[in-house]
Length: 190
Image (cartoon, rainbow, N blue to C red; front, side, top):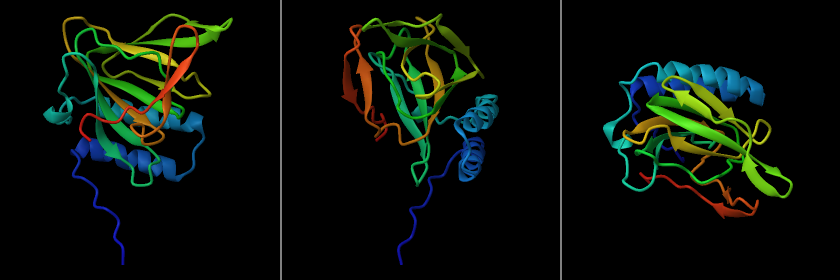
């Protein structure tokens, strides 16, 4: 008889969040329900900054780090901490699945991008997210953006939730001419 892999021991607050997301996704919700209800669950998790293990909050000098905190056994969702050193940023990229991004410490700036006349350009004003705030991305809502630490002198930490194993999903980075290149982000702790 084959046994399901044992779930890792999670900090209690993270376990409550994961259990809430599991229950939400088990109901087969629409994307708008995931954004609204999952966003509320994520805001509740972010309301307390006492649960993230130190090992999952370590910056790297040159590039941001993405640490896997939880992967649903059915790969319906993954939870990761994004640790931004001072001034660090992503390239312009997509996700191909729904995602919720919230801030635990510091702040992130997200800039949406869209194709305009065959080239790629920033779309609208940048969005500043501070501790406790959450935003959503998806192919239906807008899926292409770049993100950066809002600070040049300190670390910021986001907690992101995606509708797949985001470290294994083939995604894309975009150049200003609209060309794209596939990538898989992986995780710093895997």
